[in-house]
Length: 180
Image 1 (cartoon, rainbow, N blue to C red):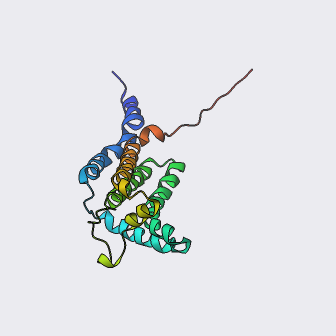
Image 2: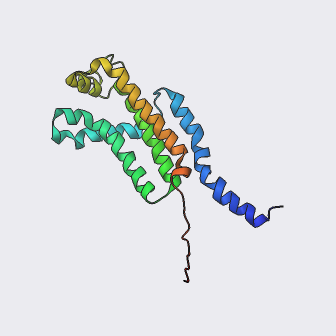
Image 3: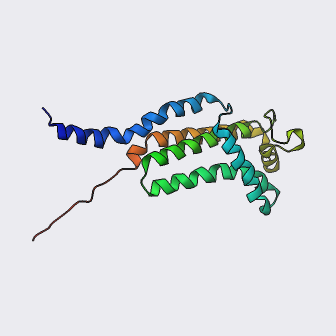
């Protein structure tokens, strides 16, 4: 039999790091099959998106239009980097899921560029960011492809969030005494 104290170490070392992944798995599955339906977090994302237009408005019309999307990527990414550096698994996982959800949100907005069916703040008086961006770059016919690329990156963020226990490990300091 394995001593009880050794079982506790096995739980702490092998199971505990995966609890965040286990908790986030249903959320990730929901967002992956959600297909862009508006959820509670999208109210926050919308505020960040609109704020990004204001922040980037000083850099010309193109960057102003891109600013909302940039801010949706920058804000969660800052948290991911911070917690990754600090080796905090669960917060890094949480913010990777948020980043992935933002990328999926962006994917549906970009894919809608030529059809412009999504409702926008301001109604018909405002322009569709991704329609403008893709028209300006001559890529409007590839709006679905651009959307799929963002969606793919969202899936990559979700998978990365689930695999954080492999990517961020807690190491113990080794005491090496070399007596020659």
